[in-house]
Image 1 (tube, rainbow, N blue to C red):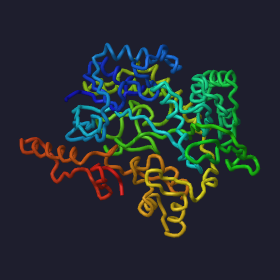
Image 2 (image 1 turned 120 degrees about the vertical axis):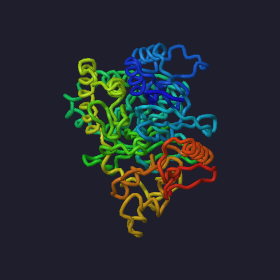
Image 3 (image 1 turned 30 degrees about the vertical axis):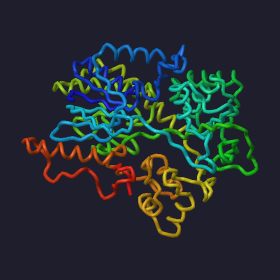
Image 4 (image 1 turned 180 degrees about the vertical axis):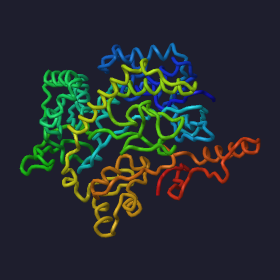
Length: 488
């Protein structure tokens, strides 16, 4: 399939970019792993569930309605259930490689003149004793269950961690009939007050959530953290404790809260796998972009959480600016600054607010002190905190990569997305580059077929790169299910 612009991700940033680019006259194709557009933020329940008021699940329902209606009348082609595993650049053109089908083993390629990466982010969860018990879910996971399945994870919940996501999760669960025993926030309210000016635009939304929590009699516990989850076969309760000014647990402050669900999260991290594979420059953990949302790789733009965690409104502004830029640049034109002035102003204001939120809601500094040696850190490979510490203290590991080689932490299905930040925190090392050849595990047969097609193209006289390999380096192996992409 050929298109002018391929957009990876059908969340707020991807949809805004697709609509702006289509309005500029481009043929646009959007690829997304979900079964319908909207992303995590605008996740919709299946029509078969018969939701009478699905808009009640979103506090920006009108925004979603505009995107949905605009998409329907735009001519943008949306390919759902397309799991993109690699984006290949060759001679200034791009091939977006995806997997589809129930087993994600059917290849599907989209050829494009330009690519927009709107790959979003994923949750950051710090480990603690008992966090692997059934009944412990991520905050975003609880929200996804409610939005997409109209189900709740339990009857009595504790929502804990840090960051602005906890508020809508707690209010959403309470509105759905769950008894929320407590909202446990590690941040100090004084830090939030110190950024009041930058967060002025966010205060009405926060106040609305606070009023709903009060109405549902949800108890907020600020400067507190969950230090242990209890239970045998599943979660039965948690111990929460107060934190001092340095983020360390204050002795003698622990209390037990009975619950069957713990929704926990410590913020978000940008999803940069595809950008890494293309060689895009990173700015810290995020994809670096210029004023037009262009990356360091010609022909590749990025928008939304991949360029820095900032929320849906910022993603919409960045996506709109990226779409306008792509539509102009593919026609060898300069983008009209007047047409994007409003979005550019919104982007700057919202980026300032995002930086303030990140400063106001840092993970508790002393969290590693509560991680016991028998606490599982890498869930995929069942590596404990004790094994990670031993790799540093006894075996001389000085970086996360060496810890991975000695313990297998980060070699599992998630490829370190969940555990590498925790491993870095426990060892005092920087996380370092991911160095993942692909964005997800790939069946060996798909790789073989891809290589065969490239060889046929070469024989037909089309340009190929001499000596090109199948993008599997010395860190790639085949697992028991003939999947390629697991690092060693």
